[in-house]
Length: 242
Image (cartoon, rainbow, N blue to C red):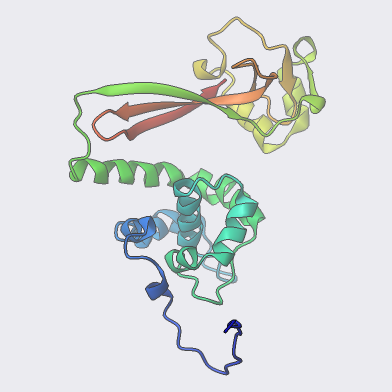
């Protein structure tokens, strides 16, 4: 006999979200080590004691951990996945009915409180410290690797290098331009190199016009990793121009 799947209407449900997360799920292991109280202590000076309660910064960090661990690069898609996935909801302490923050909230946190407080660097260093305590790092063999990361800059809105000057960035006045001016004399952002790119992005002047692997040129940064070879633990990372 052919069966038929139906969802019976119920007034009350007895549902334990944790029971639906597999015992060997990666997020269960991460959850044992993630300390939300230390995150709040680091961010407390950046919040006012007046006004409405903000979104819990631990929720943003937990969602970012999911994005990194599960390879979800789009913040918009990350919000959708957390909304739909039971394991993600459990990890983020959202329950079944908790509201997922809007994707624009991530940008405000990363470029606002997280950037000003250097919180993401603190989370990274705390992770490295825990790896050291768990003897996951030998300290004997290291490797250095670099990867090109595409910048959020459009070739159509760029200008030729000969038409570019710091005054153009000052006129733009937005965050990326201000940060570029602050690091203009930093060697890793091009001060030590006499070479000039063919184009400069007005929206992100620190991004480098580059080409790799026979693909079309694009604006990019380079992420440089120092890796302990015992368990491939990333010990340090620094972003530079592509």
